[in-house]
Amino acid sequence: MVRLLEKRQRTGSILTIFAIATFSLHLSAIFLLIFQGINIRQLSLRKPPNFVQLIDGKPANLPDVERQPEAIRQFVSKTMTSMFNWSGKLPPQSIEEVTQPQADAGISISTLRGGSQKVSTTSWIASFALSEDFRKGFLSQIAEMTPPEVFSNNPRQVISGQLAIKRVYPPEKIGLGKWRVGMVADLIQKRQADNRTIVTRFNKDLLVRAIDSFAEPQVDNTTVLQKAIYSVRADQLEIYEIRNLCLIDEYNNQNQDINVCGNRQRTDSFIK
Image (cartoon, rainbow, N blue to C red; front, side):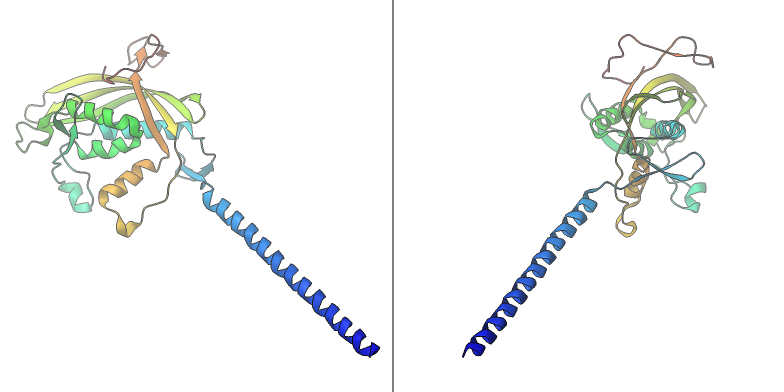
């Protein structure tokens, strides 16, 4: 009888140890799954690295707010040149359209004075390089500046416009991920019939800041305009303010410096 009781006690002890060990393994597995889940969530929330194309065309993995000075200058030049590209033609999307471009019907924009006027499609696409709070007012003023004759089908009335950039100053860092870039340029409008030209000085200070990267669009599910907009934002920079640029000497003086214009307050109009 005593041996039978001892055998039952030994069996009960082994089952108890086995149950405790199994429970401990299950508990460890639960904690391991929770730990892995937390790590996976942190990875999903982590911002992807910013790959910025340098002057030589090679990509560089830079910190979130760092940009190469020449890349900033090229961004400013490309954006402002596209903004004032009033050719009356759409950007070519094929080899055939390079030699036979399609007419640009323009895009209607509500103006600050009320009503609506048209901007070129190139200007509208380039405006996505601006911050969202600045873009609407900027486009409104571009619409007021753009001659309706840009979209005319009458060759004797057609007017074209382009921005001739004379100089873009090296970016001056004004904060974390923010720069000020001076630009000296002329806005040239030409009537095609008689080559009559109007030249307006366009000397501006542009405030630029770094922006976060974003996912690439799905090629099969995007339109031509959407692809163009993604291309504009791919530089991971945006212009968030434009001010008048004051010069000590004439703009054709290569030794000129940027002069402080009063207290450099922001004005409602970016046109000098």
